[in-house]
Image (cartoon, rainbow, N blue to C red):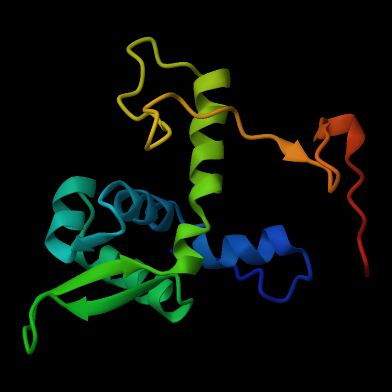
Amino acid sequence: MVKNSFSHLCCPVARSMDVVGEWWSMLVLRDLMLAGGIARFDQLVDHLGISRNVLTERLKRLEVEQIITKQPVQEGGRRMEYKLTRKGWELMPIMIGFAQWFDRWRPDPERSPLRFVDRQQREPIQQLQVMSADGRKLGPADILPISED
């Protein structure tokens, strides 16, 4: 399948989609986050049910973009594991936002087994909010997108 590139556009949303917008990429990142940031190739294949060649493509792209790193499981070994970089971990709010949006607007009658909780308190985290620089919660009517073209 031929994918259009958005790299020529100035829009940060479009250019972000060029990096992580393929749905398998987002699921790979989700699985790395759920596995504590590190997973082996075969674990990803098994858990996602993804073909090896598609996974290889997605991992290469994420590595080129410095969202993940690849390292041998043992010194001198051929088996590799993939680890999120800080850049990769900073995608977590987007993952949480997707999950919260889905739970609100397309609730699963059997409830998703995936929940996000505070590590220390084990309590559900708050809904993500857009905040102003001075800490006010902002809604859609409070936000003005400005194009600097």
